[in-house]
Image 1 (cartoon, rainbow, N blue to C red):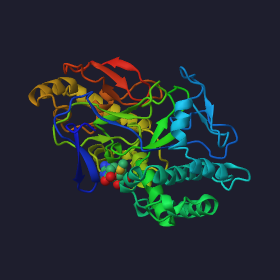
Image 2 (cartoon, rainbow, N blue to C red):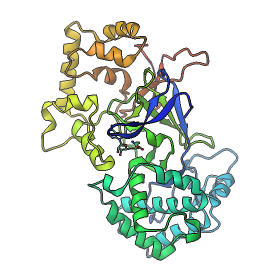
Image 3 (cartoon, rainbow, N blue to C red):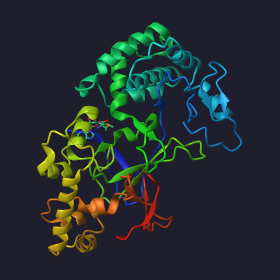
Image 4 (cartoon, rainbow, N blue to C red):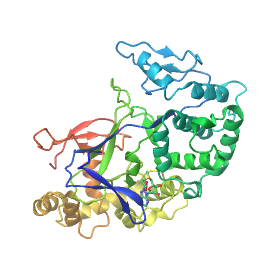
Length: 413
Ligand SMILES: C[S@@+](CC[C@H](N)C(=O)[O-])C[C@H]1O[C@@H](n2cnc3c(N)ncnc32)[C@H](O)[C@@H]1O
């Protein structure tokens, strides 16, 4: 985080959060963050070798310039995209202990076969976390300082998962106590699993119109972990996992629109097209809170939130409700764009104040957000943010989608 862009602060009812330390412009990069921990999202016991470098998680199918994939000389199982990743991994993410532990968990008869994928991925996380304690105690302390205790996740079976995995790891391959500043206990495993649940970001497969994107790995970022959630975010995350760079797992956070100093900067923890009931359920089960953002306050009154069948994304009725509200805004002469432009001039280019003026008493105050900042490519549902301003500070009028990468001219700029 650049010192001037964001500062960490305590926010009532939300724990720590990040606020704008100065006025921020749409497109501005407010954070570049490198992960302290990465682990695979794939099955630990699957027989075939994983199709990604086990250190940087670039795909191995796309040949890397000047490098041939390298197999781990210790386990002959894990593959790395080249000598650099292999040698770095052997002294960090794939230390001899991590290699040994993963082999014991994987080798037949694997104690994890028959366990659901979620449990296998939690096992990979715990091995990565205990390895971190040995190879980078300072990063392990950062991990411990992140939000998350088992009681934060009442619905999740974190304690049972911790008991099972802790017993497995301590029987097979307990980390040498000399490496651990913390005692190796089931409570520590449970706390780590809770921190993972609340803070891990998925590193996603590239977008295709035909299938849902899956995670190929998960990562924990020390600074990005402070972003709270809003169902209408003012910043969004871009990542570039398969780029030819040593920093391919870095996360870049860019502003979606202008905000004034002091405003909280929030991400949406999932695509913004999710229905109200689905958003509330995910936030309660996976993050342990009830969202009370402005969008949720409006949508809680929408007619079809009480139905038994819950739709994952906005359903047809909600779409119609949205369209009707939008049409009535436009028909009533309350032209959102004109009002927004006028309000922007008056409010010194503050989009959120402009939106408020444009929206009046609408049932659907976030129509503006969907029209301007949601990608309309089939099945994408990504968020559009302007490209970063030019070196002289001129804002860009080109919007980039953070899921499919499409570029589009911003008609409203
Ligand atoms: C990734 S952490 C964000 C930083 C966290 N607030 C902290 O103090 O470290 C996610 C957790 O923050 C809290 N949180 C995030 N967004 C929130 C919101 N809109 N309202 C209430 N709590 C929120 C929840 O406890 C959630 O599990």
